[in-house]
Length: 326
Image (tube, rainbow, N blue to C red):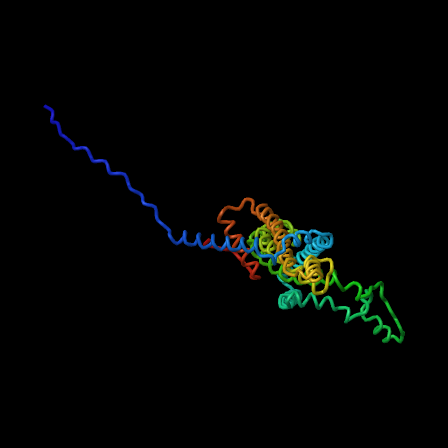
């Protein structure tokens, strides 16, 4: 005997009516931005003060291109001085020798405190202090006077300070020595971001201190050093315009300002300077992107986030350790 039980079928639920969330504020913001962009484009097209034909005709002439090459040369030489000297200063700051630490601290304190414009003008007038700069035995005349030898000189060679410490060289030294102070803090923060266990393991293998720094510490620290160094390079490109006050004639802003003063078209030349710096900065940004990608190989998403945080702290000039809780 079988018992049949009727089980009622479960009613199928009605399909969910998904109502998208509306964001009226976004559309208002888009409309406002669109109006502002349209107004800006209208200003560029209709305002005759830009004088686009004159600007385009002048901004690619040979003197301006010479200024572009001069700015790039100034950028490369100043950053080379800054990076090399910054590494040396960073190692001095991390040294166990208190004298080396003190000298490195005093250097970074001075060059970070004085504005670069003041440094550029100061270096451009160093010829006031010395007529000639000579290399040889220090205090040679005083030593000769102690032994009764008049006009004793032990100098190997020299040059006129007015001829050398002026123009391009003065601007290069002012920017390069100033940049070294900032690079010292960036490199120091990058070195301190590497786990101390790496150094201890290398010491256990019998590696010397220089080998540890060159082969173990610096390659790992580059992930932290590269982003703020890219920012410093871009800032240095903009700061090359400061040497126009030295003055350095083979510099982009100097040449553009000279054209504007000569033709009484100051504003179009200022816009041309803006366009040139935008173009050069864009090239540097592309190079920075590929450098960061190269030195970030093998680092996951959390590692890249930690690297960005360390880079921000390094740019601010502070020491960074392990970054947790990202």
